[in-house]
Length: 233
Image (cartoon, rainbow, N blue to C red; front, side, top):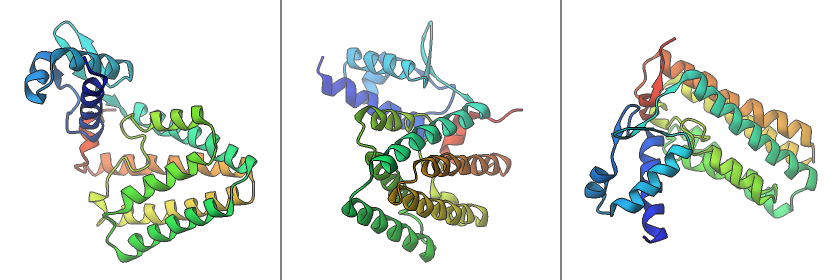
């Protein structure tokens, strides 16, 4: 079995689960996946074992089932991501960043301003994730960076977990403006070496997603990720 094959299967299946393409309760069997993906059963089985370890699948007698998540699971995942990003930006502020790194951040902020102001925010998700990854990378800790990236794999925890298909919604657009203001505050705190402030802003910034999740569920919006959520009280 080649490492490339099982990693390819892992990334493909993880992406389908996190995006909501494979909804909660979907049954997955190595034999069927092997036929549809054109890969032998062994790397598929390895990928399924890994996804179970990540908490995305539940193993049963007949194979695996895509896990459904309670709303509290969603909020816990968001909060965990905020804490990890907070630790990363706090460290970045403490060690200091270069003028070049600050310029790169300001360029990304300007790009995000442009897509929000234009009202056409199709590129927002990509730019937002790029900014978060850039901020995290400044901590210069491979372990911390890896843990932040790992948190993004959990459904709903990514900075842009709920896509901009809802960008015509006034509430959603308002949340983008608030989020962008927090981005600027965060960059300012890092540049001024205010570690505790940077941590607090990162945690609060992640919690902005709580309101988006609540509103999406209440409005019964059709975001793909909601297919994984058991919204019952």
